[in-house]
Length: 277
Image (cartoon, rainbow, N blue to C red; front, side, top):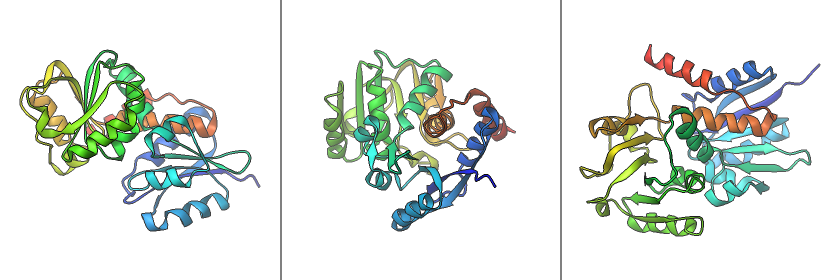
């Protein structure tokens, strides 16, 4: 009897996750045989649940909110991008039995922006809203694209400033409170808060988005998020949500685990068509 390689996503809550569907589509497309499930794992059960998963033959895990920092601590070794972000969303069993931690969120976002939406980052003035774990995971890959400036804005100015200080050796980055955004303009605004899913928005001044600028919400839903709507109301050239990022970061995790890079465009188009039907 041949054992099927097992993968999973851990999170809390997790029941609405699209990850199992995405990885099944990747497996069909690339001719891989595997199982991928979604498991409800609260933070206090994370360590024991991960240990049990790998002890029972699991090959790799994705970890979502609120488990990414715990996954960072769990990993025996980490990629450079995971080291910088201090958050891990992908755990992979290595040949020697150790667990490698990686963070594919940032590369997923950058790939979606550049390849799927033709939104350039080189020389752009970029604003990230929020200074939590979602921001931490995307800063490094964005700086690698050589923006003109990268600003983190947060309700607590100190938290934004501290996060910027951690990354300042990589490129031009500053952090401050939302009140400092008055009279500033950006070519790309990224919402890394979860507020817009509940209809909330940070206090964003008029004129914040430069003419021809773009908006991108890392969150996604079947209906446009509050931030996507804000982008449209403020005449963004494109105002997008994070469904493409979800698929692209999953493809990067799939590549880490299987050594095969799936085509993402058909999967993105399928998921988009389903939420519009």
